[in-house]
Length: 145
Length: 52
Image (cartoon, rainbow over all chains, first blue to last red; front, side, top):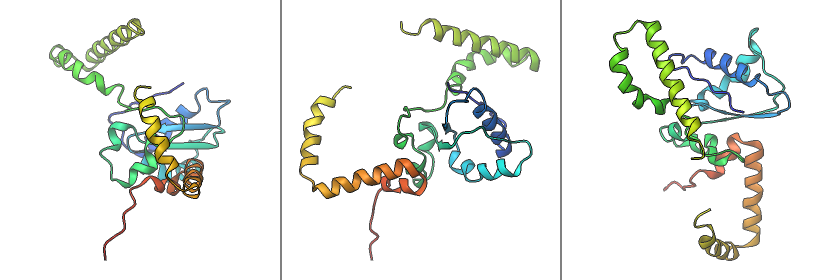
């Protein structure tokens, strides 16, 4: 079970703290450890536990062990000292993950932008949603083919 | 996994040519790194001695 968070405009850590606390509370009852793969986990993880402790609005479920890591795509752009600490290579049981699931759609969406750029915000959101669902559907029906 | 059977003999040869204590020490470090993480993971960094 992998809850995914995608917020291209929200780069403040408080937004990430909130999103991650909620993702970790989502059907994680019997689990005692979690792997958090985030583009800048190296910076974010430094103060995460302190933020949760100091906040009235944040809480963590009974997860004893949180492992912060950086996906393949972003780790290559980090300073060398991030590699050993945050590479998925050194997390037992972890797969090889780039963590760019949604971004891979962007190049396909360039074709949609021609018709979407003159639309109102609401209209455009609906059109993009439709295209995303279509893409998901195509992936689903071609699994294992 | 592709290539695993070809490289296994070479890997075994490399392991056999090393002193037992060295291998035990690496295994201990590896276990410690996966348990404690953080700075314990520095064993995977490139070790370089600085010139004088």
